[in-house]
Amino acid sequence: MAMAKKTLYIKDSDLPLWDLAQAEFGESVSTLFADFLRERVKTMNAFVHVLRSAPGSQDLVVMFNPVGPTGTGGPTRTQYVRETQLSDFLELSGVKRDVAARIVTELRGTQSISELTSIYKVADDSKTVPQRVAAFLESKAPAAFCDECIATQLDLKRHQQAQQATSGLAASSAYTRRTGLCTNCRKNVLVISVSSRHTDTVIDRYTLELITPAQGESEYRCIATNTNDGSVAEARLNLRQANELLSHFYGDQRIVADLMLRASVYGSVELVTWRTHDRLVIDSPDLLQFGFNRDELQPWRGETER
Image 1 (cartoon, rainbow, N blue to C red):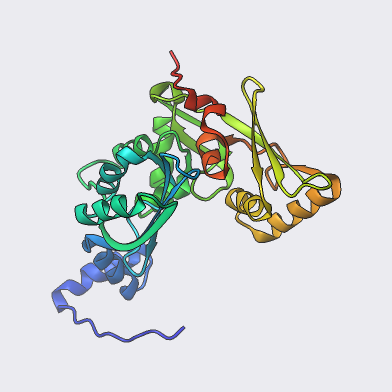
Image 2: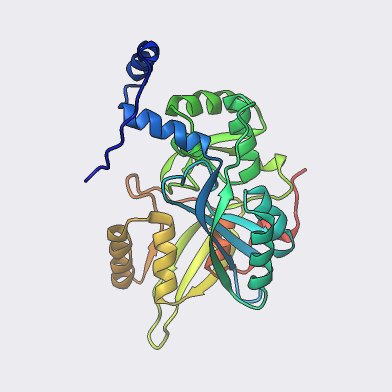
């Protein structure tokens, strides 16, 4: 890859400091300087995608896709909000007020909207790493994240910083640390989340089975089974939607193709972790964007744990 050349002049008196920094961080001069500039730039370019979980629904799926050289330090995962809360949510996520207002206005009467804009990086350097991790998890509740993704989302210099913070938080009943699906990278690893009893909404978890169309039919049936009480919810998907669902949870098109082939041969396929083949356990908010009825999913009945 071709690299542009820029000349940086350093005072003789600063050379020992520069050498010390390079020895400690083990990176090139250009990388260190680029990291410094990236941290000092307070805005970033990003696509903001907003779509309804179903036609006419007030439940929205919001996604941020940072782009360009400043594309770090901002939200990058899927969020779920009510339409009435969209403007406030976008502003809290760093979107400028006039852009947020335009997105809200243009979304009316349509299924989705995408906007490329400049957003403010949301960070609070006055907080310690554990405080930043706790605030991040609370802002994303009930989503669960692995240490690596937390470090990336918070732009931490070292993965171990996130690991130390989450290990400390896990000692509190306010957080749950377990092996599960990371909301961001979709890997089945050690994750942490705010405990459901510390949120306003009960978050249940489901396993999924994809059933191929019967003769004369064209839609796949996706059966979600509640891991707690065995209740089920069902969505009917066309071929494109079935592929999107599998792609969302696996990310690798080779795995998706293999699963679709297995479904066609055996009539159905159960979603499992690719390495251990244990049942894949999915948080209920992840199902909203795939045609499941809000009222059939346990946490969307207005229940709260007591």
